[in-house]
Length: 396
Image 1 (tube, one colour):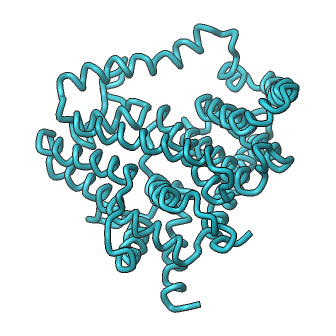
Image 2: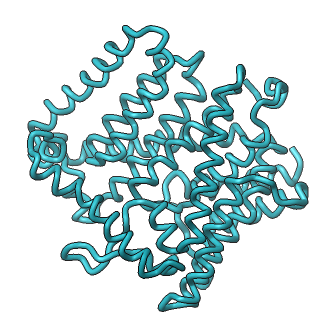
């Protein structure tokens, strides 16, 4: 192993730690708009540019650059130019080196590192919840109460990470010829249970959607499988709801018969859309990356619970084009993957987990380090998808 290989491996460690558990390993450096792990990402990406020597003609990359450019423009019209400009500068710098990072992953064969990252992500959040469950003696467990008491992270963090890692690991190791193997069923079962216990309905719904989506080819080939897969998910929910009967807060969170509660907690997202439209009309050039919030109910301001709307509100009309360009390119990449006769498990796992991540962004705000990792991986996937020498390029 060369010295450069060792340096890159060492730099990857803090990146992996922050991606896996930002609640534990997000190390901020005073006066710098980048965490320690993001500086490591920047260094690896910069090294990659020494080899790559050019920016890619990649519309995912271009789309996010345009989003960031819109935020730069809006900073001039914001209440605090310096703070908005500085925050977006950190975002822009990481975007700029993402192609270099993707090149390093390919050149130094770091795909096993990506496997390990998602493996430990799954284990970390599984044991994180198990610890809270055991300490509360099961029947007294309430994630929402623990969150109010500042004893746990936001439920969307645990839901997002467990869903992402379950999808990646399933497609990477337990998905053959359009069918899930037993390991995939186990991973998705655990992910569904964790999303349920952490009371994150949106992540639970997305996990179930991805489970059915990955099973759809099998359903089409064998229509009888639809019933068995549906019964499988229903069986898990029956057991969970039986468990929830011993926990009032958990049962109320998922009790579909309580239409008043479900409407009050879910339809607020519709109100966010109306508030977004009003703010967008008032601020067509954007409000700035730090001011992309709207008035809501008794709260002074709140985030929109949709990263794409937040991008648009922060970057204005310019950001709209960036979002549309990214969505169009990702859709094109996904369709191309499905048209190919042979796609190695690595790019397939990357694209399906990226689909899960960017789909989840319709329900929450998240611009963590994992976003830049996915942008890098999608750049690599676009450039390499369809090559017939995958067997030579990747370990089994």
